[in-house]
Image (tube, rainbow, N blue to C red; front, side, top):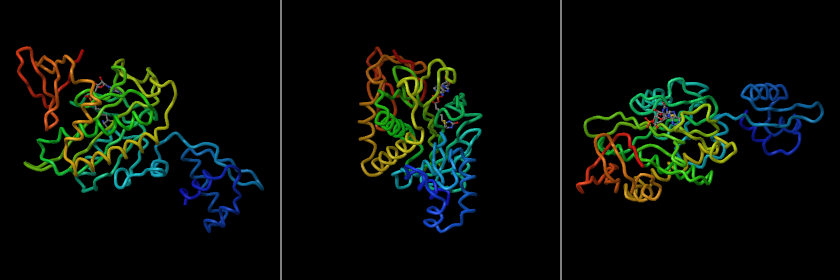
Length: 313
Ligand code: BT5
């Protein structure tokens, strides 16, 4: 009912009388009032003037389910949406959902994380209402050895969505960083539950710095706001990321991994650069068919890395 009331109010330039709403939705004036109160508690600013009715003045800057689903053009990704004011980490919550059999495409989102994490239990700064912190459950038909592909697929999907929506030059640093001007704007974390030869489910965690200021970020990081000079609607970014991810995921099932690798190469900040990954030093020359990074060392040998932190020029 609240969704319908908000829908009416959004589509009305002027005041909408209680009588109009009541007639269209077939509910009492008292019920309208009760729902309006609940919407206000969610943060919608709605003015009520006697004899005129209701008017929507502002929508809260929150990733509420009704806002994310309104304008989400996916088939499955994000259609089941679980929203929290605060979680320790969207990864922990989603992993439990995965174990409980939650379907592919289920999306978990939190306004802040108290123990947001990166790889190897590193901290992911997750200040309230500033960034996007979400986890998506997938059930790909992949062997555990191929799970690096999921990180690359997600990097391509998120990178494209951010580029299209903001016009900023977002690039991918192997394997899981998205950078603008050499600073990290988003990170991806892939965790899986698997048996010997098949993946049960994967949780793809995505953190994007959207409206953060430098005060809320490590020095090596940036945000969409810091790069563009203005704030961004986080709801639109979640919607665009889900659509882009779903398209690339469908492509992965139908066309295999090659189109993703090709797109990854275009968006890559790593290929062609001098890099160091652990003990290995050389030039990053390509990705292999499993998503590993191929480095050519000074002796001309091609070495494959499947994980690690890349230090690059
Ligand atoms: C990542 O790890 O880049 C993966 C980050 C994934 C975060 C999402 S948020 C939703 C979901 N729930 C979670 O708990 N996690 C996922 P890694 O490559 O290990 O990078 C971590 C490093 O990035 C840290 O050690 C810091 O140096 C830096 N860092 C921390 N917070 C950052 C931020 N907000 N922006 C940019 N860099 C950050």
